[in-house]
Structure formats: structure tokens, C-alpha cells
Amino acid sequence: LPLVAKVGVQSPYDLAVLLSKEREFCSTMPTTEASTTITVSAPGKVLLAGGYLVLEYPNIGLVVAADKRFYCSCSIDFAGKGHGDEESNSIKITVESPQFHSNWIYHCQIDQECISLRADETNISKNGFVEKTLRVVLSYLWQQQSQDANLKSFTGIQSIDIRIVADNDFYSVVPHLEKRKLEPTPDNVSNLQKFLPCPVVNGETIINKTGLGSSAALVTSLVGCILEAFGASHLPNISEGDSDKIKATKKEEDSLLVVHNLAQISHCFAQGKVGSGFDVSSATFGSHVYRRFPKSILPKLLSHLEENDESQGKTKNGISKSTAKLLGELTHNSWDGGIYQPLTLPPGVDMLLADVCGGSESPSMARKVLAWKQQQEGLEGEQKENYWENLRAINSQIMFLFTQLSEVMNEGDLDFGKESKFVTLLADSKADEWKKVLHQHLQEESSDDTTSLQAAVSLLVKLRQVFKEARQNLKSMGDAAGVPIEPEEQTELADATMDVPGVLVALVPGAGGYDALACLYIGGSKVRNRIGQLWASRNTDMSKGKKICSLAVQGGGFGGVHGLCVVPPH
Image 1 (cartoon, helix red, strand yellow):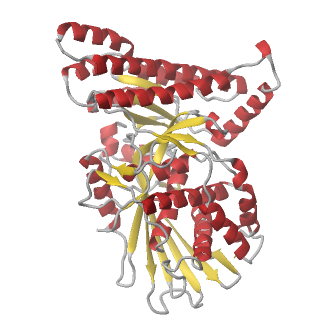
Image 2 (tube, one colour):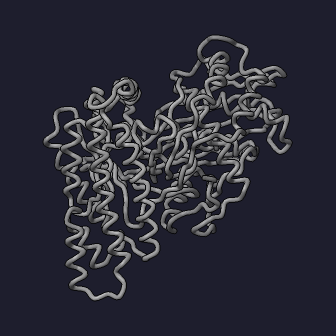
Image 3 (cartoon, helix red, strand yellow):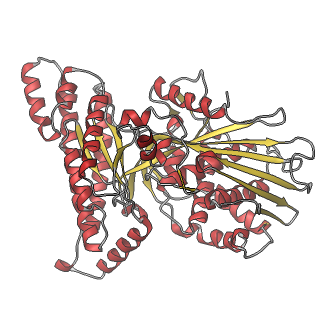
């Protein structure tokens, strides 16, 4: 489907929270009279349905954009000589990552035949996602400058300063909570200082990811930020005074697609493989039903980029004109796949995520599952296990139920997050009892129109059942493939969470494993705290070295403040 024309925020609170974070972040960015600072923000993600199947076209995945985000700021210095490299045709690029306790310096060299990027010899660490994204974006801009007179020219640029930070939830907050002697509850995580640095042990930075798609959000925000700084894009701009909903211009829609394509290329280049791309798509557009792009469109370009990748020590010639031209053509082409359907969680249905310190190797798990699937394709009859086919139908049903539920609740002006007698009854009851609660409520309360309410509760119960079927098939498929998609520890935790009053469903998101648990619930903060208390209480039963920590993550919507956007510095 074409990108919808409306982007926006769901409430003034969403806008205020984002602006508050932007002001705090931008206030620490150094600026001079010769530079303008651009800040671009991209959300994290949670894949609620479509794990493994989303790797193959035309299967779908339901990806929810998180309200936790990456922030990338960029300033270009056109000051006089002496502020950049000694060589007049070389641009010094400094990337600061305070949370990683790191600074990376690169030197961009440009001549008539090629553009190259060299890491400074003083760099004490590497970040392949940053370096390869810079290589791709700068090559694209170099190629575009001969075609777009409105772009800032590389000529005269002395230096480019970039700063990248992320909301705390992308990395384990357990060390910060333990240092402050706080319980791992959603409120305690929410109240932590913004942009806390990763802990350092024996001189080594400890980076424990929580599965929110940090690399995709980093790459997407970095691509968007650099393009904006050079005047090469016009992304949705969220600023004070904007209304709750902002109508996207054609330029903004086109810019999002360009950033998306460049970010997908950069992310695949950095990973060394062509992934499904749902994480980059969510970081660009927000929540949606996703269908992957064809794998066949990237290998030729990636092969050329690898051949010209100085970081691998293969050549000193940089990116050639022909490779940059191919990059530009592919970036501006229309790709199949992408947004199959915009997605927004129904009113009052929210998401909570637990960081289960354990960790899983998603790439190796995916290889084993796909190998199992290929083996199954040669079997027939009773020998063949139909988990893959079952999941394909189940995921489509989940998408259909989400769509129906949102339509019914919007038409009936229902919100399961607002306080009311009936919402309180549901929030204080287990989901398996919701139909009974509804029946009793309708007998006690007289109302002229209960059609929407009955339909909404019926759809919630159906959605819960279908998610249960998805869990069962994923677990069985993992067992058949020898992969712990839903290991016993996670099954026990998910089942216990689903028994909490107000919880719609609990599941292992994405590729599964030991490292995270996601749940959907109604009833607002009361139920949210109830879930957090359950998770915190189970830490005493965990084996040594593991800990369950509730994050402060909630679900976002589609477009506008929920996707990739710009907020000017304050």
C-alpha cells in the first residue's frame, strides 16, 4: 500500500515527551556560528508476530515501533582553514558516542574519480555500523551533488560533528538499578536519568542489548540526520506549535522512502548479509504490517561496496563513480515489499517489555530454522510438520483481528486505557474470564447500545486465543529444528504473565530465545505495575546470572512522532 498521507502524534503527551528529550539532548550539542545542528530521531521495535517467516517473501510480520528512540545530531562546519584536516580536500568527521564512552574520527577524501573514508589511527575502537553507514551515505551525497543544485557542496566543508545517544531501554538497565538499590519495575526504569552510559568493568565497556533493534535505529537516524544536514531530505518535522496530526507533504513521503532504502543498504552492508529489514522499516515509518523486500536487489551493490571497503584493507581506491551511480539508482528505485498495512495498537491496549538477561544468537537460530524448513519441503503426508504453514495463516489472522479491533473501538469511541467501571472490571479479571465479566456487566447496567463493547471484547478474546496458537506453533517448530524459540523458562514466565489480571497476551518477540518477553495489556498503569511486580518477584527463583528486568517501553503508532522525524535544536 502507498504510504499514508497523515503522520502525527496520538496525544499532546507523546509530543511533549519527545520534545523534552530533544531539548535535553540538543542542549549538550556544541554549536558555532558557522554550523547548524540537525537532530533526527528513530524508534526501536518489537516484532509481535512473524518471527522467522518474515525472512521470506511474501510472509508478513507485525512490528510495533517502541516509544524508546535513538537520537542523532549533526553539524557541518564551514569555518576557515585550520579547523579541519590539513589537506584542503579532506573532511574530518568526528562521531561521539557518550554512552559507549567512545569517539571515532574519520577522514573523507574526495577527488574526481572516487570518494573514500579512512578511520583515524588514533581510534581505539571500531563501530562497523557507524563507519559503513557513513561510507554509504557520503557516497550517495557525492553522486547526488551533480544532480541536485540545492545540496550543500562538499567544497568548503572543514568538519562534520555527529553525536549519537539512545534511550536507556536499548541496553540493560540492571547495573544502574542495582547501583541505586532500586527494584526492576517500570516506574523505577522510567525515572532513571536520560541517556545513561553503559557500565565499564576493568576498562571494558559492557554492552548488553535488550532486543529493541538498536543497530537499525542507529543506522536509520544517522542516515536521516546526515541527509537533512546536507539538505538532501525533508523529513517530518516535529516542533513546538505543531498540531496533534501533521499531514505529510509529498517531499516528506519521498524523503522517508529514500532514507529507508539507504538505511536498508547501510544496515545490510554493516551486517554482511541481507536481512528481512523489518527493523529498519519500523525505525523509518513506525508500527506497521511488514513484507520484506526482494533479496535479489542488493547483492550486486553490496559486492561492489565490499570490494571498495577500505576498512577491510582490500583497496585504497574508495567508492568509484560507477558504484556510487549504482547506489543512487537503487536508492531511488521503488522496492517491492515494505509497508503492507499501517498498524496502531487499539486504544487502551498497550505493550510492556521485559529484559531477560540471558541472550540468544538470533542469526544462528534463524539458519537452523530455515535449514529445517528446507528439509521439510522434501517430505509429504504424515512425515511433514506443518508449523510454518500454520504460522502463515495465524499471522494473517492476527493482522485481521488487530484491524477489526481498532475499527470497532474507534467507531464505538472505546478506550481500554481510560478509567471506567467496565475497564476496571476487565483490568481486575483474567482475560479468560472477560466474556463472563461482560455478560454480568450487561445484566447489571442498562445501555441502549452495547454492540461495539460486545464486539470489542469478543475480538480481544479471539486475539488472545490466536496468539496462543502462534506460541504453540513457534515452540513446536523450534523443538523440531533444535532451536529454543520458546524455551521452558520463557514458557513458564509467559504463562504466569498471561494469568495476571488485565493481560491480553505474553510472548517471546522476534526470533524468540531467552533474552526478552513482550506482553499486551489493558487497564493502564495499574496493570502495568502489576506485571512489573510479578517479573521482579521471580528474580529470587532465577538461576545464578539471570535477572528479569521490566523496561519502560510502550508501543507507538504509525508515522509522524512514531517514526523517523526531525526536531530542531532548542
